[in-house]
Image (cartoon, rainbow, N blue to C red; front, top):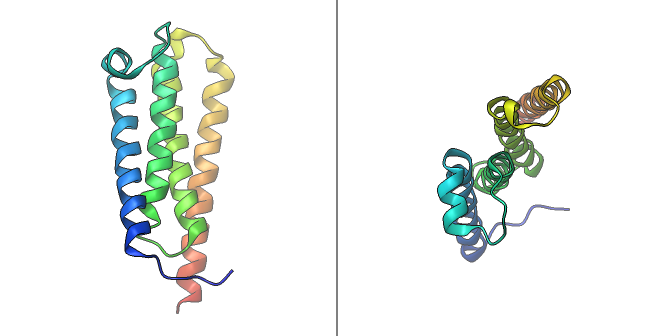
Length: 132
């Protein structure tokens, strides 16, 4: 599909949604108890779940914001996913005493993060080479 310039309305919505998602994601990740007491609609409190929710929100918001910096959708989506996966990895590292499977979760999530960052680097280099 051929690229069409963004309207101002779409640009504003993308930026506002991105900032909202990143902001709430950082809040859920850094202060899950205050996020839960202010926002959550269902018990019980689960710190790790809120860390993961925060990681995914930051990733989604970052992807939206990166669409305003880069005109390549794949580059923006890879960047947002790499950020989300990396914060998700940090969440599992921080919360390894809360359950899960640290011996498998952390290596798998670390590998996913590395693969996504690697794919982003490859796509960035591919685009840079094509523009020369």
